[in-house]
Length: 156
Image (cartoon, rainbow, N blue to C red; front, side, top):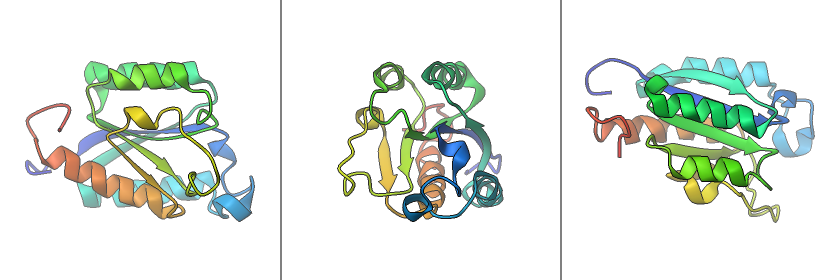
């Protein structure tokens, strides 16, 4: 950030992400949710960010968090929709009217796996297929987005 203050960003981990490291490690790797959280909390300041991480199992929980972001609790959203990938139409509708930038992130290349994201059309950008490194790339991208316009909440 150009003013030296960390920009607060929210990471929403969708349904089933809490099982990271244990669920289908051939696809998602062996990094646990706790290990990923620690890695991201350590990396966020390098990009001028402070990070709030939330694991949600219901789409309504994710929408409530997005409402809070829009109310000014954070300047940006990074989200792995995970289990909401297929039918998250309510989530997509809410994301489309959010003021803050939104980066969708996936550990795997979902296109390669024949998956389509219901929320991708609402995203400022999408990062996929880099393993847990996708999240680090998302932090870097969010930091750059917010630096473009430090005086504006939506950063774009």
